Image: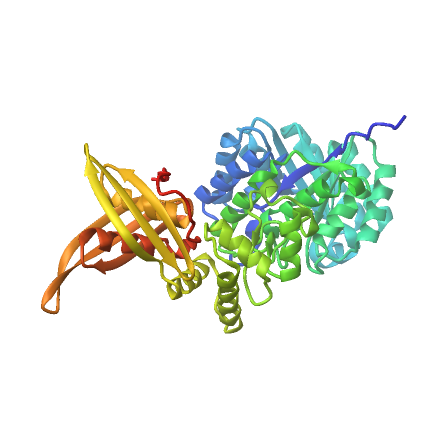
Length: 514
């Protein structure tokens, strides 16, 4: 009898977009913008929001306090040096929060001790004990960070972590402050500390991306025993940035078989949160950014597109909808016929194989010339091909009785011919139904205008028609010797881009599309 799979270990997500993310050169968030991001993070069910550095400025203090009063679910946290004034400011700023934390830190590495603090190891330990103890007096939850932990002597790092726990810290963060470590090293470091620290203490990881390994190192830390990951939306942060929240979350969720862990994040809101952070920070999300980039679920290679049409899992390891994105097949010079025909059908355009082949040739030529192939461009190509074989109206008959108009007509297109019948209160709507029936299409007439126009020694009728389909509105314009003839040709012109093949059938069957 097979054993049930164990429940995934719960990893807390600590978001520092509003503190470390704002330290990105060029980013300056307003108080209103910070509050908007905080509410979005809370809706994502982030566990901890590091709202800022209270002692940094009066503006930061006020923003943290406003966030503390607005957030409903997450713990609100403020950063503080192991310095009395910092810690008191942090505790006061987060006081309105339902759940609050002071996050205090001191540098631990020999480089920082010597060149930044000018302190001995003993002095560092004394300062951290005093700082953590004060924070524990003022706030029910305290986190301690040993800055530049990955360049700190392992023995001294363990001593500092134990000293912080003894002073009242319940979360110990091991930051890779300068993005120096590697996944194997970091996993080993975390595993060693996990063996030393009491089981109730949560180990946290905070990784920077200087060597492009922030997410990989964070995940390695989880494998080493970390129960909290510190990250930011879109990987914002100092220098090359931090571990990207969306990548960490989806890596844990997608590869739960490897990590045995998951988060409480509502992933369907990730793309929306990413877009908000991008807009308010002014930092654009690269199209090829993992999880939330515009191309993260886009496929242009013909081989990939063919596979995707067959089954999504051929080239997508996550569902686009799970993160609030859309999976799409983009068209370009590497795309194949399957993808183009798939997109045409999605746009409601039905074409015979020979016609579709000519549209494919047009698309390839345009793509080779560097023209982007979006839906509008594809519609234009389909229209141009359709107009090369225009739909001709023949045998148009319009009768009226009891306030109803009945139309019978034939439509010739290329070598095909179809016939249709339509009945409606107005002649124009009846004509639209008859044309739709004859071409085997579904649309309704949205508007129609007619008028007489001088032409040579006489006059002609001019008609403008707009039809509505599930794919959008399409317009047509034509002229004829009679008003009804002009209307029929204008509607056929508007429907040309939708393709359709003339269909033979009983004219007695009335189209019901409009």
